[in-house]
Amino acid sequence: MNDYVFQWGVVWRAFPALMSGAALTLQITFLSMALGFVIAVPLALMRQSRGVLFAVGSGWVHIGRNTPCLFQIYVAYFGLTAFGINLSSYVATLLALTFNNASYLSENLRGAISSVPVQQSSAARSLGMTRAQTFIRIIFPQALAFAWFPITNTVMVAMLNSSLGMVVGLQELSGTAAFESSKSFRTFEFFAITALIYYVVAKFLLGLSWVGFRKISRNPAR
Amino acid sequence: MIEVDNLTKRFGILEVLKGISLAVEKGRVVSLIGASGSGKSTLLQCINGLEPVQAGSIRVDGTQVNDPRTDLNKLRQKIGIVFQQYNAFPHLTALENVALAPRIVKGLPKKEAAALAVQELAHFGLDSKANAYPSQLSGGQQQRLALARALAMQPRYLLLDEITSALDPSLVQEVLDSLRMLRKDGMTMLIVTHEIRFAREISDQVAFFASGKICEFGPPEQVIGKPQNDLTKLFLAAVK
Image 1 (cartoon, rainbow over the protein chains, first blue to last red):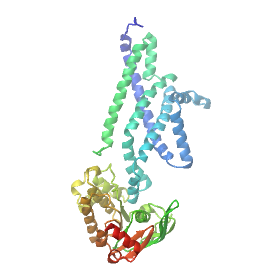
Image 2: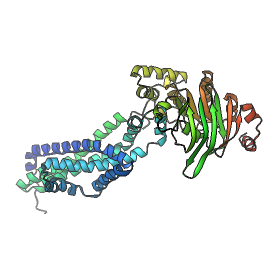
Image 3: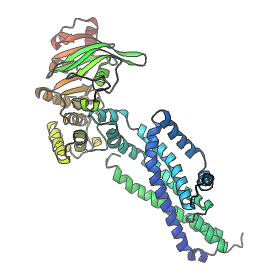
Image 4: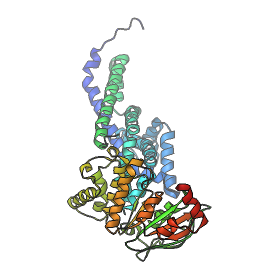
């Protein structure tokens, strides 16, 4: 180990490949978050209702949060073939991450929705707003501000989780690093640089989150 | 006209309203006084359809509130309510707070709704605060904002639920002045209040509540000035 001589040249030559891997990581993070969010809002509402809707919503959230993301990717890629559904590694990873994100995001939102004082709803309803108008105009905007940083946290975990796509052959950042390093066996160098890239991407997402927060929370007291 | 007839309201096994009957005629101001927990606020919530009731009836201009066929969203446009805790929408400016419901409930064009909001804000002395957020307003200003928001829907009735109870003593008068102004404008109001002197001054009729019942009802000179019921006497002696 002491004789190990670091050689960074191979990493540098593979840098364009790593960058396109990072781009795929970002892409799959954004897509799985956007899709996950669209599903998370009704999931959060279902969890506050009763009967079948509650059961379906809770089932989704429980499975999503209490099984490993790796397992979910395996199910999407290998498991679904038992039902004749053959997904590419890209689609399978996207599907599994969306499933996973939706369950975490819905819990972020559910907590935030219930922390909006119930009087806000009374005030809106007493002005003649419907339940839907009350949710969209009054409850949701406030809940989104409450949930913003928990959601940011979920985004960052999702971005790191996308590295699991490599187990089904997805050439995102980790997959690319593994593939490129196998050509030269310069594993340390490749994964050191890869970790650094993940770090930068995570910081970038955090920065985006702050910019977004300034936009959604116009209220100066927040 | 608001007509409440033999109304019963329970929360689980707790009976909060035990056969309340009360009529508020158009243009009149009626105050509900009594100890906390006697059911005054609950009655207002029931009249607005925010709380379901178990027996009896509530009619507003002949429309029964506690009838599943009644379109409550439509009915509520007629009945404004203002709460103890202001309940301003914190994510909206004062102007947006007032303009939102006229725009999305009544379908007013954006410009008209904004003009109406400016007018209502001015009415309550908040013209300079149109672009402020509720967190930048004092309690008294927030409560006047809540009044402006309710009035922008041009309701026929206004229900006021202890609207000065959460205010600094120094801010109570500005809100009471707003109510005096509304009375002059001929607004029909049902006021839950602990401000006995104010109730005496502004009301046409006063109802004294104790444990879910109206113990005494009549003009303020009678109920507050010369109470007949022992419970009323006891209560008034305690708050004086």
